[in-house]
Image (cartoon, rainbow, N blue to C red; front, side, top):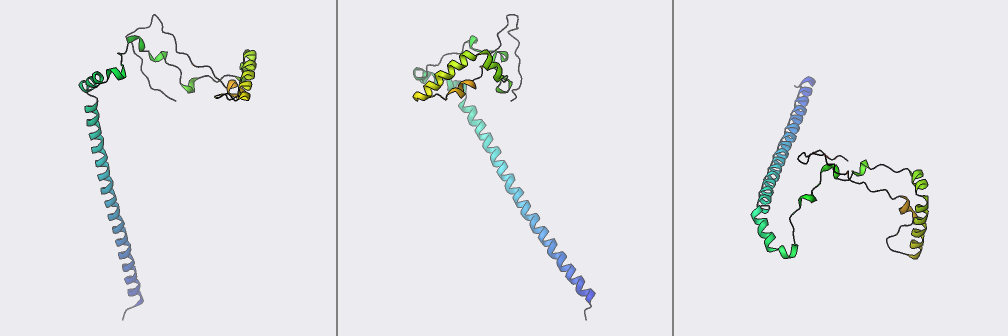
Length: 166
């Protein structure tokens, strides 16, 4: 003769066993997923190592020199001259550093040029000339940033480095 209290305890024990089994099963699934992800990570690391080794082989100076000699007539490569190198100060400004031109100043300072450009652009677009966008393209034109001139007193051996932020 089972009493109600015994039946309630049996029900609680069954529910507890079910919840425990469910939690254990979910934990096993998560462990399997972790092992699968670790295997994928190892495969990716091995692939990266292989690609680094391949890059080292492909960029060997001796190999590149042979390729340059073999394809010299087609490529017509020339050594870089020291005058072709520039300092960081001489590079143009970033797009974010370009000052935004004031529309009223542009109209006042270059009124004649803007009106003449607008007329010629309108005439060209009316004729159907390719590559013209009309007067709007002329009005939106911004001046190109110019590199800073090289100073004579600047130390040629000093190289400034920095990060580019946009």
